[in-house]
Image 1: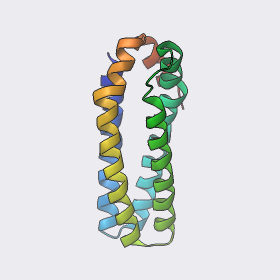
Image 2 (image 1 turned 30 degrees about the vertical axis):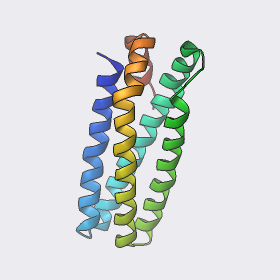
Image 3 (image 1 turned 180 degrees about the horizontal axis):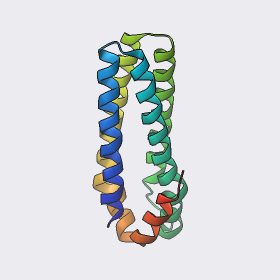
Image 4 (image 1 turned 135 degrees about the vertical axis):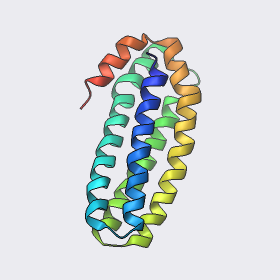
Length: 142
């Protein structure tokens, strides 16, 4: 298996949970929204840790600097973390409109981010790193 395939599967899983979350918010089901948000939020943070603490560290060690896309990816992760925190607060306050608007913003960021990772970053990682070793290390991240 390649890093690209492994991580793209992770993206799709998070996307599916996010779609359920948006649907629950839109239908006004706050209990389901809060539960789905927790699942989504935890999965996204784990995904970020897999990349930032394993793949990006290994890639930065092997790539020797230069034009390094990991800095852009981490900055986008930070932007998504802030937006997820805002969604959580909107859900806690029962503010459906704000939560949905923030979800729309997050969806846009995620789509752009995932495209960069799937078309560029993961392929660079597969070409630079031992994919099997990196995937095994990422599977251990909790």
